[in-house]
Image 1 (tube, one colour):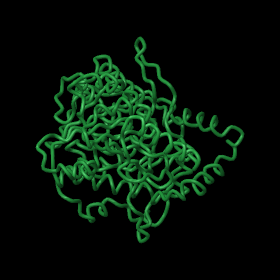
Image 2 (cartoon, one colour; image 1 turned 120 degrees about the vertical axis):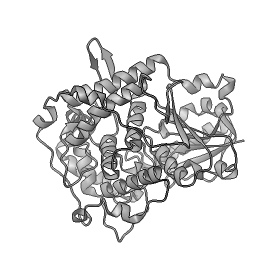
Image 3 (cartoon, helix red, strand yellow; image 1 turned 180 degrees about the horizontal axis):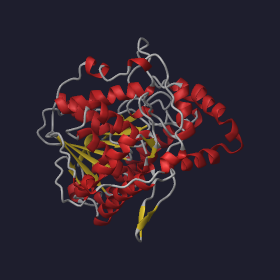
Image 4 (cartoon, helix red, strand yellow; image 1 turned 90 degrees about the vertical axis):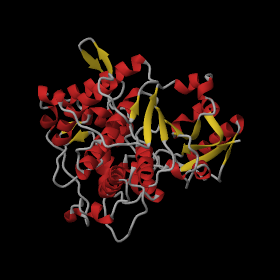
Length: 438
C-alpha cells in the first residue's frame, strides 16, 4: 500500500536536463509506485521551478492503489486545509491501520466529492480518468463507497494485521518484540534510514500504526488499506489486509539526510517533508525553515513518542453519515503545470500495439516487483528515454544474496530488451537502477 523507495523529482532526471527548453509536455509513466510520492515531489519542484507541462501517467496492479492515490492527492491539493492538518491527514491515511476520529470524519465527507469526480459529475482539473475502462471506474466508485461504509460501521483492520503477524512469525509470535528488534538493529539500521527509531518500528510492527502525535489518539479503522474490494448484492466483500507488514511507510518521505543536531522521530521528519512539499505546491515558492518549525511540537523533539492502543470498542463504534456531509464541496488549488492520468492495469500491454502510445514516454518509473513487465514497457519509451527501476535494498526480507539475484535478473532483462545502465548499479547501496533506451 506504499512504495519502498524515496520520492523522486522527475525534473532532475538526465533526459529532462537535456530537453528543459522543449515546448512538448513531459510524459512520465509510473508503474506500481503504490502511492503518489513521486508526483508530489515533482509537483513541488515544478511549482518553484517550472520547465515543462507534465503529464503523469499512473498504472497500478489493482484499483485500490489508484483510489488511494486520488485520495492522497486530493488531501495535498485541497484549498481549505491547513498545512499541518493536511500533512497529518496524509500520513495517517498513508501508513496507519487506525485513524484519529478527526481524520475519519474528514474522510467520510471528502470521499463523496471523489465519488462525484469518478462519476464525472464534478469536474476535476488535475485528474483524468478518460483512459480507464468503464468497469474500472465503477469499481473505484464502489471502493470509495466501501471506505465510507467501513469507516462508519467499523472493519477490524488491526485484527487482520495481527493475523498476518501470527502467520509470519509462527512459534516466535510470543517473542515478537525480540524479532522486531532484530529486524531493526541487524537489517534496517545498517541500511541507514534517517530518524527511524527502534520504538517506532516496533510499535508499527505490532499494530500497523506508523505515525503518532502527542495530542491525538488513533481510534477508527483505516479501510483504505483493505484489498480486493468487490461490490456484492447490497454490500461488499473484501480480503483482509494484504500489504506490507515488515518494512513500513517511513521511506515515502523520511528520506532526507539525518541531521545529528535535530533529534527527530520518523513521524516528525516525515511531517516536516510533507509540509515543505505541500507549501511549495500551494505557494509556488521555496518553503522557509520557520514554516516547518512552527508546526513542530517542541515537547517531543528530544524524545520518542509511542501511544497505547485504544480500546477495541472505540474502533468498532457505529457512525452515521449526515446528509449535509454528502453535499459539502471543497475546491482545489490551481495546478496549471501538470495533470495526473490514470490507466487500467493491463494498459501498457495493449498500448505497445497502438501507434499513438509508441515512443511516448520521456521517463518511466517501475517498482521492484513489476520488472517482469519491462518488455511491454520498452516500446512505449522515447529514444534516449530514462527508465528508473526501484531497488529492493530497503526490504527487510531481502538479504544480500537476494539483492544480488535481483540485480542479476534485472541485468538479464535489460540485455534481452535492449536497454543499458546509465550508471553502475549496486543493489546493496543504490535506491534505483537507471537505464536508457538505445
